[in-house]
Length: 378
Image (cartoon, rainbow, N blue to C red; front, side, top):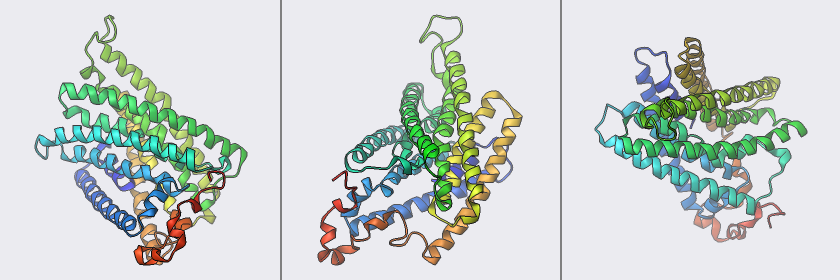
């Protein structure tokens, strides 16, 4: 997600220079390579131990990250338009239209299915609430920005449908996220902060407001082209302009909420920085804040503000630097066996499900799915 998010930000940042698009394409290509690699590794894992697929979907930690896979797909679709429009044939426009609706259908299904599984099979403690509880709905949080990105090249009929779909799915994602914000705030007020090592994961709370604001700005800017003058009302002011103003106001209403969580998280990280060790949560330095950066880029465009554009460019530079730093520490941690090894990550409570059919033949635990559930769920 983080690599794709950087590619999207580089393709939209307001202040450009020669070679910036090439850098963005490099990130995009790397994103595709990583996506295919990790997809292949996950398929291999579930082929070796099929029961881990079902287990992972409602695992109290790993299960939350299933939604992030689909967010990666949305970012690839974003990049396909940003770096492919005008570079390839007209087939890309129709392909993106089809992919958009397939993505929306899958994302909505994932959000309903996963939360239903958690409601039935798990009992999570409110005192341990983390922003990652939002992940099952996260694929829908990026629908608004995806719709706003691919709209300009779509024909009129398809554009209107994508516009409405973008608003609908962004709305449900934002409202579900807002409900979970309340649980997360309760945890912060009544319990302790997450440990210093996983504290970067608190940046996930920046994403819902950031991507919602970005989606509202992006969709609003295109409303005058899509909505006929008297589609909703009989006023003198064209309805498209009314929707544009409402959308911009909605984006402004939300964007500072993302900045608020950004500063809350940054202060929490600084307070525990001496105790921090690398974990995969460090990638949250990039992806959620990419949503904040995209929202800032769109706000600068909507308000025609050079100052906001400057802030957006600064955030873009910081994101790239953070990506390089986190990538270095991640590669080093993998090399040293600290992450992405059996028993080291979110799946460590499933380690009794042995790898491969040979290991599972005599493993009685491999034939039961209930041992990682909470006692209440059973």
